[in-house]
Image (cartoon, rainbow, N blue to C red):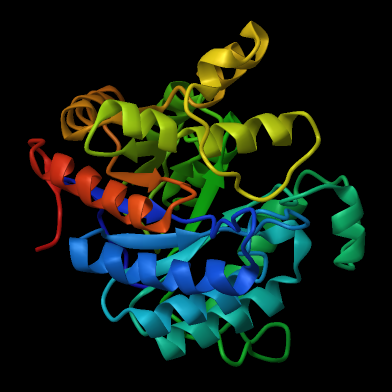
Length: 344
Protein backbone atom coordinates (compact mmCIF):
# COMPACT_ATOMS: atom_id res chain seq x y z
CA UNK A 1 0.00 0.00 0.00
CA UNK A 2 1.34 3.43 -0.95
CA UNK A 3 2.19 5.57 2.09
CA UNK A 4 -0.21 8.47 2.47
CA UNK A 5 0.16 11.71 4.37
CA UNK A 6 -3.13 12.77 5.91
CA UNK A 7 -1.79 16.10 7.12
CA UNK A 8 -4.38 18.61 6.00
CA UNK A 9 -5.66 22.04 6.89
CA UNK A 10 -9.26 20.89 6.56
CA UNK A 11 -11.36 18.71 8.87
CA UNK A 12 -13.64 16.16 7.22
CA UNK A 13 -17.10 15.16 8.41
CA UNK A 14 -18.36 11.55 8.39
CA UNK A 15 -21.26 9.46 9.73
CA UNK A 16 -21.38 6.58 12.21
CA UNK A 17 -24.62 4.60 11.97
CA UNK A 18 -25.43 1.93 14.54
CA UNK A 19 -28.40 0.84 12.38
CA UNK A 20 -30.91 1.28 15.21
CA UNK A 21 -33.96 -0.96 15.47
CA UNK A 22 -36.93 1.03 16.74
CA UNK A 23 -39.50 -0.15 19.22
CA UNK A 24 -42.44 -1.47 17.23
CA UNK A 25 -40.27 -1.98 14.16
CA UNK A 26 -37.89 -4.69 12.91
CA UNK A 27 -34.45 -5.43 11.47
CA UNK A 28 -35.52 -5.34 7.78
CA UNK A 29 -36.84 -1.82 8.27
CA UNK A 30 -33.65 -0.77 10.08
CA UNK A 31 -31.54 -2.03 7.16
CA UNK A 32 -33.69 -0.26 4.57
CA UNK A 33 -33.33 2.95 6.55
CA UNK A 34 -29.56 2.48 6.85
CA UNK A 35 -29.19 2.32 3.08
CA UNK A 36 -31.39 5.39 2.69
CA UNK A 37 -29.38 7.28 5.34
CA UNK A 38 -26.08 6.39 3.64
CA UNK A 39 -27.37 7.61 0.27
CA UNK A 40 -28.54 10.80 1.96
CA UNK A 41 -25.13 11.29 3.62
CA UNK A 42 -23.42 10.77 0.27
CA UNK A 43 -25.63 13.36 -1.43
CA UNK A 44 -24.94 15.86 1.37
CA UNK A 45 -21.15 15.51 1.02
CA UNK A 46 -20.13 13.47 4.07
CA UNK A 47 -16.74 11.83 3.60
CA UNK A 48 -17.43 8.32 4.87
CA UNK A 49 -20.18 6.17 6.38
CA UNK A 50 -19.27 3.59 9.01
CA UNK A 51 -21.23 1.00 10.92
CA UNK A 52 -20.09 -1.17 13.81
CA UNK A 53 -20.11 -4.71 15.14
CA UNK A 54 -22.36 -5.21 18.17
CA UNK A 55 -23.80 -8.55 19.27
CA UNK A 56 -26.86 -9.58 21.26
CA UNK A 57 -28.17 -6.00 21.20
CA UNK A 58 -31.90 -5.89 20.36
CA UNK A 59 -31.65 -2.28 19.23
CA UNK A 60 -28.69 -2.62 16.82
CA UNK A 61 -28.90 -4.40 13.46
CA UNK A 62 -25.24 -4.25 12.36
CA UNK A 63 -23.84 -7.45 13.93
CA UNK A 64 -22.98 -8.96 10.52
CA UNK A 65 -21.03 -5.83 9.64
CA UNK A 66 -19.53 -6.91 6.32
CA UNK A 67 -22.95 -8.00 5.05
CA UNK A 68 -24.48 -4.68 6.09
CA UNK A 69 -21.68 -2.83 4.30
CA UNK A 70 -22.38 -4.75 1.08
CA UNK A 71 -25.99 -3.56 1.39
CA UNK A 72 -24.81 0.03 1.96
CA UNK A 73 -22.33 -0.13 -0.89
CA UNK A 74 -25.03 -1.18 -3.31
CA UNK A 75 -27.12 1.85 -2.29
CA UNK A 76 -24.29 4.37 -2.78
CA UNK A 77 -21.65 5.13 -5.39
CA UNK A 78 -18.97 7.48 -4.02
CA UNK A 79 -18.92 7.76 -0.25
CA UNK A 80 -16.31 5.68 1.58
CA UNK A 81 -17.90 2.90 3.64
CA UNK A 82 -16.42 0.81 6.40
CA UNK A 83 -16.40 -0.73 9.83
CA UNK A 84 -16.06 1.41 12.88
CA UNK A 85 -15.40 -1.22 13.77
CA UNK A 86 -14.79 -4.92 13.56
CA UNK A 87 -14.05 -6.43 16.97
CA UNK A 88 -11.07 -8.49 15.87
CA UNK A 89 -10.85 -10.80 18.93
CA UNK A 90 -14.19 -12.28 17.80
CA UNK A 91 -12.78 -13.44 14.47
CA UNK A 92 -10.00 -15.26 12.71
CA UNK A 93 -7.99 -12.60 10.82
CA UNK A 94 -8.21 -14.71 7.65
CA UNK A 95 -12.01 -14.53 7.70
CA UNK A 96 -11.92 -10.73 8.03
CA UNK A 97 -9.35 -10.50 5.22
CA UNK A 98 -11.67 -12.50 2.96
CA UNK A 99 -14.80 -10.53 3.93
CA UNK A 100 -13.23 -7.12 3.43
CA UNK A 101 -11.29 -8.27 0.42
CA UNK A 102 -14.64 -9.17 -1.11
CA UNK A 103 -16.03 -5.74 -0.22
CA UNK A 104 -12.97 -4.08 -1.78
CA UNK A 105 -13.55 -6.07 -4.98
CA UNK A 106 -17.20 -5.02 -5.06
CA UNK A 107 -16.57 -1.37 -4.16
CA UNK A 108 -12.97 -0.56 -5.14
CA UNK A 109 -11.34 2.40 -3.45
CA UNK A 110 -14.18 2.87 -0.98
CA UNK A 111 -13.59 0.39 1.87
CA UNK A 112 -12.18 1.16 5.36
CA UNK A 113 -11.54 -1.35 8.13
CA UNK A 114 -11.51 -0.08 11.71
CA UNK A 115 -10.39 -2.59 14.32
CA UNK A 116 -11.28 -2.79 18.01
CA UNK A 117 -10.24 -5.21 20.73
CA UNK A 118 -13.50 -5.27 22.72
CA UNK A 119 -15.90 -8.17 22.06
CA UNK A 120 -18.83 -5.91 21.17
CA UNK A 121 -20.84 -7.69 23.88
CA UNK A 122 -19.78 -10.02 26.71
CA UNK A 123 -17.81 -13.22 27.24
CA UNK A 124 -20.86 -15.40 26.58
CA UNK A 125 -21.04 -13.97 23.08
CA UNK A 126 -17.31 -14.51 22.58
CA UNK A 127 -17.77 -18.19 23.45
CA UNK A 128 -20.72 -18.43 21.10
CA UNK A 129 -18.56 -17.03 18.31
CA UNK A 130 -16.15 -19.93 18.76
CA UNK A 131 -13.15 -17.80 19.77
CA UNK A 132 -11.01 -18.64 22.78
CA UNK A 133 -11.06 -16.28 25.74
CA UNK A 134 -7.28 -15.87 25.76
CA UNK A 135 -5.95 -13.22 28.13
CA UNK A 136 -2.73 -12.65 26.16
CA UNK A 137 -2.41 -8.87 25.84
CA UNK A 138 -0.33 -9.26 22.69
CA UNK A 139 -2.96 -11.21 20.76
CA UNK A 140 -4.72 -8.16 19.37
CA UNK A 141 -1.55 -6.61 17.88
CA UNK A 142 -0.56 -10.02 16.49
CA UNK A 143 -3.98 -10.41 14.89
CA UNK A 144 -3.64 -6.98 13.28
CA UNK A 145 -0.24 -7.85 11.84
CA UNK A 146 -1.58 -11.17 10.58
CA UNK A 147 -4.41 -9.30 8.88
CA UNK A 148 -1.92 -6.87 7.32
CA UNK A 149 0.06 -9.81 5.99
CA UNK A 150 -3.02 -11.29 4.31
CA UNK A 151 -3.82 -7.99 2.61
CA UNK A 152 -0.19 -7.66 1.53
CA UNK A 153 -0.29 -11.10 -0.13
CA UNK A 154 2.31 -12.63 2.18
CA UNK A 155 3.06 -16.20 1.04
CA UNK A 156 4.60 -17.33 4.34
CA UNK A 157 1.48 -19.24 5.56
CA UNK A 158 1.62 -21.29 2.35
CA UNK A 159 -1.61 -19.80 1.00
CA UNK A 160 -3.15 -16.42 0.23
CA UNK A 161 -6.37 -14.78 1.31
CA UNK A 162 -8.68 -14.92 -1.70
CA UNK A 163 -10.30 -12.41 -1.92
CA UNK A 164 -8.07 -10.19 0.20
CA UNK A 165 -4.51 -10.45 -1.06
CA UNK A 166 -3.48 -7.20 -2.70
CA UNK A 167 -6.54 -5.29 -1.48
CA UNK A 168 -5.90 -1.61 -0.81
CA UNK A 169 -7.89 -1.34 2.43
CA UNK A 170 -6.83 1.26 5.00
CA UNK A 171 -6.74 -0.19 8.52
CA UNK A 172 -7.71 1.95 11.50
CA UNK A 173 -7.29 1.40 15.22
CA UNK A 174 -10.34 2.24 17.32
CA UNK A 175 -10.32 2.98 21.00
CA UNK A 176 -11.78 4.69 24.03
CA UNK A 177 -8.67 4.44 26.21
CA UNK A 178 -4.96 5.14 25.97
CA UNK A 179 -4.18 1.61 24.77
CA UNK A 180 -5.62 2.17 21.31
CA UNK A 181 -3.73 5.45 20.95
CA UNK A 182 -0.45 3.76 21.87
CA UNK A 183 -1.05 0.86 19.49
CA UNK A 184 -2.12 3.07 16.57
CA UNK A 185 0.98 5.20 17.07
CA UNK A 186 3.29 2.17 17.25
CA UNK A 187 1.82 0.60 14.11
CA UNK A 188 1.60 3.86 12.18
CA UNK A 189 -2.14 3.60 11.56
CA UNK A 190 -4.97 6.16 11.66
CA UNK A 191 -6.76 6.37 14.99
CA UNK A 192 -10.44 6.83 15.80
CA UNK A 193 -11.50 7.69 19.36
CA UNK A 194 -15.00 6.80 20.61
CA UNK A 195 -15.65 10.14 22.30
CA UNK A 196 -19.33 9.98 21.36
CA UNK A 197 -19.89 7.59 24.29
CA UNK A 198 -16.57 7.41 26.22
CA UNK A 199 -15.06 10.91 26.17
CA UNK A 200 -12.97 10.92 29.34
CA UNK A 201 -9.55 10.04 27.87
CA UNK A 202 -9.98 11.86 24.56
CA UNK A 203 -7.45 14.67 24.95
CA UNK A 204 -4.75 12.52 26.52
CA UNK A 205 -5.22 9.78 23.93
CA UNK A 206 -4.86 12.22 21.04
CA UNK A 207 -1.74 13.72 22.58
CA UNK A 208 -0.13 10.29 23.03
CA UNK A 209 -1.03 9.22 19.50
CA UNK A 210 0.47 12.32 17.92
CA UNK A 211 3.57 12.33 20.13
CA UNK A 212 4.45 8.67 19.61
CA UNK A 213 3.37 8.16 16.00
CA UNK A 214 5.77 6.17 13.82
CA UNK A 215 5.38 6.43 10.04
CA UNK A 216 4.40 3.18 8.33
CA UNK A 217 3.85 1.74 4.87
CA UNK A 218 0.24 2.90 5.15
CA UNK A 219 0.56 6.29 6.78
CA UNK A 220 3.35 8.88 6.86
CA UNK A 221 1.85 11.21 9.49
CA UNK A 222 -0.74 10.87 12.27
CA UNK A 223 -4.40 11.06 11.31
CA UNK A 224 -7.02 11.24 14.05
CA UNK A 225 -10.81 10.97 14.04
CA UNK A 226 -13.17 11.50 16.97
CA UNK A 227 -16.84 10.73 17.53
CA UNK A 228 -19.33 13.54 18.14
CA UNK A 229 -23.09 13.27 18.82
CA UNK A 230 -25.33 15.70 16.94
CA UNK A 231 -29.07 15.95 17.53
CA UNK A 232 -30.16 18.83 15.34
CA UNK A 233 -33.58 20.20 14.45
CA UNK A 234 -35.23 23.44 13.46
CA UNK A 235 -35.91 24.36 17.10
CA UNK A 236 -33.94 23.69 20.27
CA UNK A 237 -37.00 22.14 21.91
CA UNK A 238 -37.45 19.65 19.07
CA UNK A 239 -33.77 18.71 19.13
CA UNK A 240 -33.85 18.16 22.89
CA UNK A 241 -36.86 15.89 22.53
CA UNK A 242 -35.37 13.90 19.64
CA UNK A 243 -32.20 13.31 21.69
CA UNK A 244 -34.15 11.55 24.44
CA UNK A 245 -34.40 8.30 22.46
CA UNK A 246 -30.63 7.87 22.61
CA UNK A 247 -30.58 8.99 26.23
CA UNK A 248 -33.10 6.28 27.11
CA UNK A 249 -30.93 3.72 25.30
CA UNK A 250 -27.89 4.68 27.40
CA UNK A 251 -29.88 4.46 30.63
CA UNK A 252 -31.20 1.03 29.62
CA UNK A 253 -27.72 -0.17 28.71
CA UNK A 254 -26.20 1.04 31.98
CA UNK A 255 -28.96 -0.64 33.98
CA UNK A 256 -28.54 -3.97 32.15
CA UNK A 257 -31.80 -3.80 30.23
CA UNK A 258 -30.84 -3.00 26.61
CA UNK A 259 -33.71 -2.92 24.17
CA UNK A 260 -34.86 -1.34 20.94
CA UNK A 261 -34.64 2.40 20.34
CA UNK A 262 -37.64 3.96 22.14
CA UNK A 263 -39.71 6.91 20.96
CA UNK A 264 -38.71 10.32 22.35
CA UNK A 265 -40.19 11.61 25.58
CA UNK A 266 -40.44 15.40 26.04
CA UNK A 267 -38.76 16.45 29.29
CA UNK A 268 -37.23 12.99 29.83
CA UNK A 269 -33.75 14.07 30.89
CA UNK A 270 -34.90 16.70 33.36
CA UNK A 271 -37.22 14.16 35.04
CA UNK A 272 -34.43 11.64 35.71
CA UNK A 273 -32.86 11.17 39.15
CA UNK A 274 -29.78 13.32 39.66
CA UNK A 275 -27.42 10.35 39.45
CA UNK A 276 -28.80 9.34 36.04
CA UNK A 277 -28.59 12.92 34.80
CA UNK A 278 -24.95 13.09 35.88
CA UNK A 279 -24.20 9.84 34.07
CA UNK A 280 -25.71 11.17 30.85
CA UNK A 281 -23.89 14.48 31.28
CA UNK A 282 -20.62 12.54 31.43
CA UNK A 283 -21.23 9.89 28.77
CA UNK A 284 -22.78 12.30 26.26
CA UNK A 285 -20.64 15.34 27.02
CA UNK A 286 -19.22 15.34 23.49
CA UNK A 287 -22.55 16.28 21.91
CA UNK A 288 -24.48 19.12 20.36
CA UNK A 289 -28.24 19.39 20.78
CA UNK A 290 -30.00 22.24 19.04
CA UNK A 291 -30.39 24.19 15.82
CA UNK A 292 -27.86 25.16 13.14
CA UNK A 293 -26.49 27.84 15.47
CA UNK A 294 -25.83 25.49 18.39
CA UNK A 295 -24.30 22.82 16.16
CA UNK A 296 -22.00 25.32 14.44
CA UNK A 297 -20.86 26.67 17.81
CA UNK A 298 -20.33 23.27 19.45
CA UNK A 299 -18.72 21.56 16.46
CA UNK A 300 -16.36 24.49 15.92
CA UNK A 301 -15.32 24.38 19.59
CA UNK A 302 -14.75 20.61 19.42
CA UNK A 303 -12.54 20.90 16.34
CA UNK A 304 -10.59 23.77 17.92
CA UNK A 305 -10.15 21.74 21.11
CA UNK A 306 -9.01 18.49 19.53
CA UNK A 307 -7.49 19.46 16.18
CA UNK A 308 -8.81 16.19 14.75
CA UNK A 309 -8.52 15.54 11.04
CA UNK A 310 -12.03 14.12 10.94
CA UNK A 311 -15.21 14.21 13.02
CA UNK A 312 -17.55 11.23 12.77
CA UNK A 313 -21.12 12.14 13.64
CA UNK A 314 -23.34 9.78 15.63
CA UNK A 315 -27.08 10.47 15.62
CA UNK A 316 -29.59 7.77 16.57
CA UNK A 317 -33.15 9.07 16.36
CA UNK A 318 -36.49 7.31 16.44
CA UNK A 319 -37.93 9.28 13.52
CA UNK A 320 -36.06 8.52 10.29
CA UNK A 321 -37.02 11.76 8.56
CA UNK A 322 -35.89 13.76 11.59
CA UNK A 323 -32.57 11.89 11.57
CA UNK A 324 -32.00 12.79 7.92
CA UNK A 325 -32.88 16.38 8.71
CA UNK A 326 -30.36 16.34 11.57
CA UNK A 327 -27.58 15.23 9.23
CA UNK A 328 -28.57 17.99 6.81
CA UNK A 329 -28.44 20.66 9.51
CA UNK A 330 -25.12 19.27 10.78
CA UNK A 331 -23.36 19.51 7.44
CA UNK A 332 -24.84 22.94 6.74
CA UNK A 333 -23.41 24.06 10.09
CA UNK A 334 -20.05 22.44 9.25
CA UNK A 335 -19.88 24.36 5.97
CA UNK A 336 -20.06 27.59 7.96
CA UNK A 337 -16.97 26.67 10.01
CA UNK A 338 -13.57 27.74 8.72
CA UNK A 339 -11.33 24.74 8.15
CA UNK A 340 -14.03 22.13 7.56
CA UNK A 341 -13.96 20.31 4.23
CA UNK A 342 -17.28 19.11 2.81
CA UNK A 343 -17.62 17.54 -0.62
CA UNK A 344 -19.71 19.41 -3.13
